[in-house]
Length: 474
Image 1 (cartoon, rainbow, N blue to C red):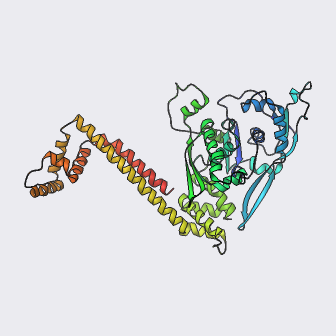
Image 2: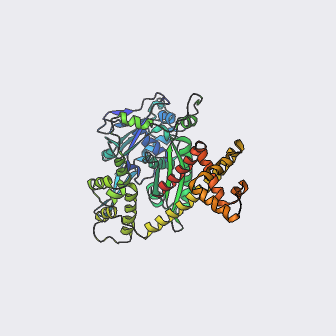
Image 3: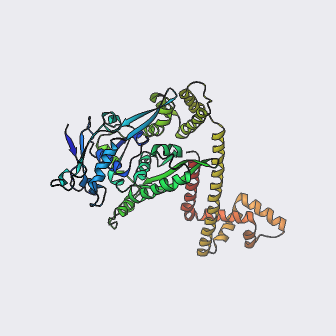
């Protein structure tokens, strides 16, 4: 078997080294230390698109130091010990078969070749500061010839991250095209194998999630803009991460590059996506993205066949699928499903099944939507008042113009005439400033007279309201 190694030449800053993993591998259960992680990533960086078999991969100590930005004084022993300990590690992938939970264990390395302990000081030892590793053949479906249901990213994005930040980054990177991901806390703990170490959510959030977000925002191409704690009662059961790709200036600042020649742009084409496409990987449609998004729940856990699920995605929205998954999970947990879990899920999607939890969540979402829109409307009123003050200062006669327009209007003129008859006199400008109904009418007419001044302001608030409504049902 031929041995493959990375060229020791320093990587150009704009050269992408793709790391590609099957999605179910990213979501598998395993726990690496930092050197095991660096070794595994170094192996993945050497895998080529057209590889059909694993090679013997040579990982040179000096390359690891250069790529990961480590101190050259660190010992080769870290690399040797990391490779040896990786020999005993495994990935555990969960799946379901006919409603029964199963797990498949994958041993990672078939063999490791290292320099013996104590040999470092000998003549010629420096040229032996490498490890040769061979990956187990059973890992092929998870790493080789990946055409769908995989995630790719540039190695440079994770070289400065710790173990848990890399895991969180990969979980978010899976959903890059969507921009948000909701993950159950218990599932994350199981994936990271820390369910015993961090029993309390507060500890898990403090020592795993918050540091991960900090490192991701500081060192990677993603920017986590919001994290939401999702509760059942008083207990936090899941977290929703909202994130986006950084723009050109943000990336340049992160790398310490000169930004004077750059123009601020929204995130555009992802260079990693371009690199993947250059490997002739077919771009995913929105339907493919939803298939990948819910694959684990629907196909692996519920046992729905891929063809049936794809057919459901032709006719039903993401929100409908998510609702059916939640209802099915709870019905399954409460042993309310008499026959097939797959059949229950399909019917839940088609008939829009709901339950007490879903109804409660829906009511809560509507309540939050109502409060959010009310707050937006209040800010809108204040902004309109400020704009009217600004216009009045520029044109003191604009209120008079508005009153004249109101008197000339067929409908409002009747209202004004009724007011005047009740008072026994003609309304003054001061009346128009004191009476609430008249005040609102004058404001509306000023806005009509100066449409251009209010267009951008009103559009901004309308966009906010639309965003709130969209979030409620997403």
